[in-house]
Image 1 (spheres, rainbow, N blue to C red):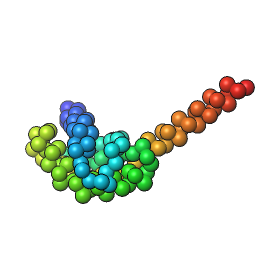
Image 2: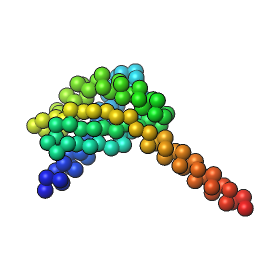
Image 3: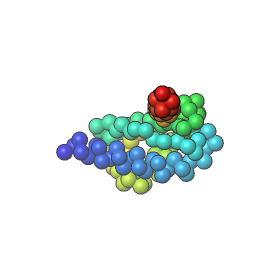
Length: 118
C-alpha cells in the first residue's frame, strides 16, 4: 500500500509543479519547459525533478539554474497546495528526452519519405 501512496504523491507533485513553473518569473526559466519525470524518495524528503525543454538541452540547463534559485518559492507553493506533512526538497535535473524524441520523429519521417519515393 505504501508504493501506491508514493506513486500518488509523485503524480500530485508533477501536476502541481506544472502549474507552479508557469508562475516563476526568473528570466532563465524557459516558458516551454516540460516535466519529464519525478522521483520521490520513500520517506518523502527528496524529489528529483527531470526537466526538458523543446529548445534543447542548453535551454534546459539554464532553466535548471533558474529553478534552483527559485526552489524556495516553488517548495513553499508546493507545500501549501499539497498539504503534506513534509514537503520534499526538490532537485532539478536537465533532461534531453524531448530533443531526442524530436530527432527520432525526424528520422521516422525521413524513412517514411524514402519508402514513399520507391
